[in-house]
Length: 133
Image (cartoon, rainbow, N blue to C red; front, top):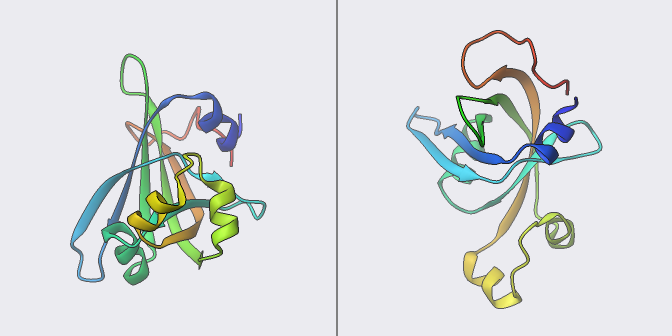
């Protein structure tokens, strides 16, 4: 199963962990990543702490906890590759549709793309049963 299929078929919660240039860390709830044609993943970010951190330090980790019993899920180790502000592209990717007023009130949006450098299970370091990229 590919990562894109895994996320499309596995309900759960995601946490994006980032760190500033000085090493101070942050973790925030995030929707599952968007999959781009180039084989990269992307997140829509507002101009908040996670966005500020990846602007200073390109590395992040996305931890996905699958719904259900036990500790199931995966971790994606990421490196930022680019950032876009194309409003039409971002709006086309948004899963939650906001009114124009709601969108403006939340602030500017950024489409931040990452290369997936490593994938591991939620618990442990055995790469068996990890979806292929």
